[in-house]
Image 1 (tube, rainbow, N blue to C red):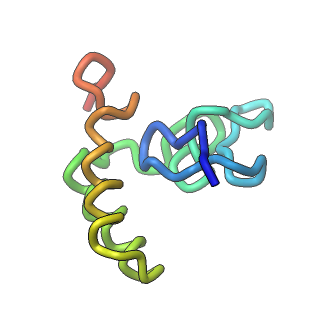
Image 2: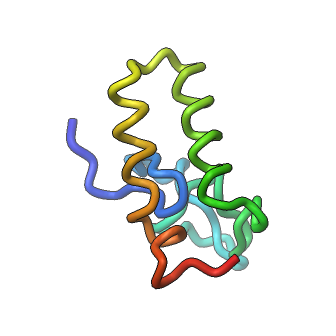
Image 3: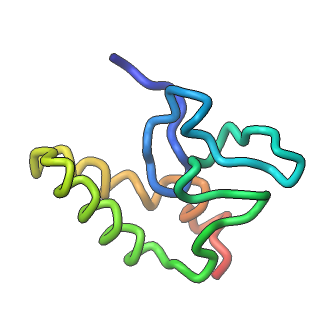
Amino acid sequence: MEFKTFCQSCGMPLHAEDLKGTEQNGMKNDEYCVHCYENSQFKYPEMNLDEMKMKVTSKMENMNHPNYLIQKAVNILPALKRWNKKNYVK
């Protein structure tokens, strides 16, 4: 199964509406997941890229994903909108 939309913070596939974060008006956000984004803001606004890498690694290990897949997921994080140097604001 191929996903075209991924959370631009943690990289999670957004293949279902209930996985999408929300805006202030309750509408779903197509760029961020429910774990990262709620009510038009990041749930963990102080989180940095290294902390997100650790969080993604831990979550995927707990889900018993193979190491190569975990590394692939962690390696794409810097290219995502939230962490991309052009968009990244601490």
